[in-house]
Figure (tube, rainbow, N blue to C red):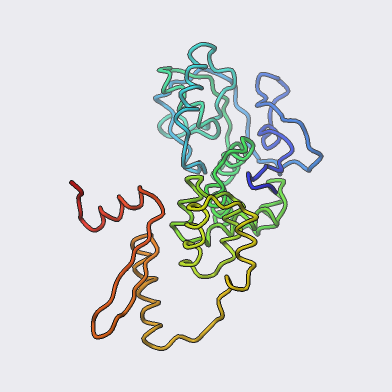
Length: 306
């Protein structure tokens, strides 16, 4: 699997749900890559597509994507204004109207474009199937943030009681690929944020996930960002004997300092170092990876720069 997390799915969303023979109801297939398609989701097809009001549509609570590119949404909105919406969104009926299953970007762009109604196809699916369809739609776009993808995988595993192998079979992916994404959840929070912001790549993150110490993870991640280090360079540096720390049993006072550093780091979301200089004296060093983190630190400390 490449650093961009290339999808191994062989067919489109229509391979996951039962659709009628009417071509108007197909969501469109992509070219098969010779892999087995994802497991079919049980659903009941309702008449459609029909025009429904945007005001009656609520978001998909299982949407795995946390961030949406404003520029892309604006361009899509302009396209909708000039050409209309060619591909309907997919919804299910809810108490207050309709709940989105697939088509979050189109729904957001339609609101930006000032549309009041959009075409929709109806499906009757349960919550697990709804989560799977939302995940598959985003994976097929191939630009889903690796961390969001990892959280979505873990959510499906937890909600549906699946093993990694069962999830891989259901999504038409390799189990090793699923495992690589799930390892990202073991990264320290500041490192996860760098990944979410695109400052480190999926390849960097996979290497860093193999480092047990969260403070060391963050130190290496900051080096990657500061030195614009490639994945291969990071791999070579981590393989050097000098980069491997020899395990040692800390003294009671050192163990206290280590626990204190971890506690401060977790609360601030930034790497912290405590240095004792004898008889109640010492220093506290807080490392930030970006100006945004620096601003967050000032806010947590209650400081304002004039």
